[in-house]
Length: 261
Image (cartoon, rainbow, N blue to C red; front, side, top):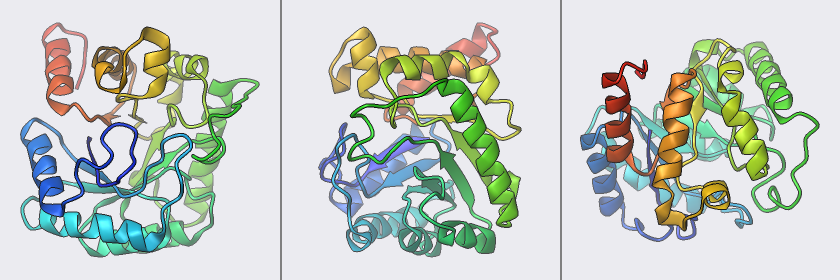
């Protein structure tokens, strides 16, 4: 899953792809590098981020979606927790909604999923982006995320959303300390036993810098280590800014007989 942020304030590449044509070109480049799907974000969800209005989010995302859908049949995902943005995105050609709130803001999102049969990334987050990293606490982070997945899958089924539509994301960096993230990474085997694909998104995140050093653009090595580890232990989708390097690492792992897909 290649990342295309069309925001002015994302932690990694905010402001770089404000022009829809440039954003579409960036997405097409990621596909040429080996991405299987593209995730487009119109609202920064970095720690401390200020919420974006639905109108602003739509104005950023929809022009990029339309350009891409006219040029590729590749699956397109939109990173949003707002039902109105999700509805506009699906109407413009998106295939997947990547929801950091996992439907906890209300059932409107799930009603949309039920009616459209769109794909859905259901992510765990403690708190909200503006405050989530101030003091995250868990008694047992792995057990709590695992339980959250079970509860969300049951609730989604009760809302009429098929399990086949759902991908699960532990939400690395979303209300977790570096040690919480390490515990979740080590527990990939357990988290991948819910019967649905598991997605990880660690690309360039701050916990990598705190654990092994490196500024935002200097964390590829740490991200690749997480990728190789988690793919060996059951992860099905890797969300990354660095598609070419990630694809190369996974291909090499396959050649070495480590069982990567």
